[in-house]
Figure (cartoon, rainbow, N blue to C red):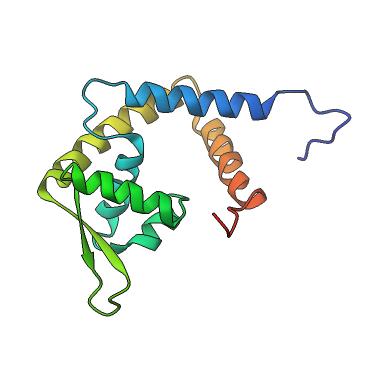
Length: 149
């Protein structure tokens, strides 16, 4: 079922989405037990599934451009969470690997993410969450990342 302009309620979706994203990000960053930033946690999650990923692949998975992923990897390496190594087959490419400290932080981030996801889903049915997830995912298709970022 599609909404048409004449009958759709005005939900201020842009405003609601922006406020929700900012509040969640600030809340997560302010948690006292949080040893990593939300962006670092995202990188750790990617490396948890594919340790040694190319930096460009990690950037694409996090919807970041080359400068953004480079800065994130630099900060994460400085924190002792990851290690950057030259790719064996392409000396121009870099791969990112979890350190032991990064593995510990990943386990903590997984626990924290499960708690936050549970709070986000509280009060909603599984079917409602499926719709929200489908809607949020559709935004990525409707508004693709610019190739020059």
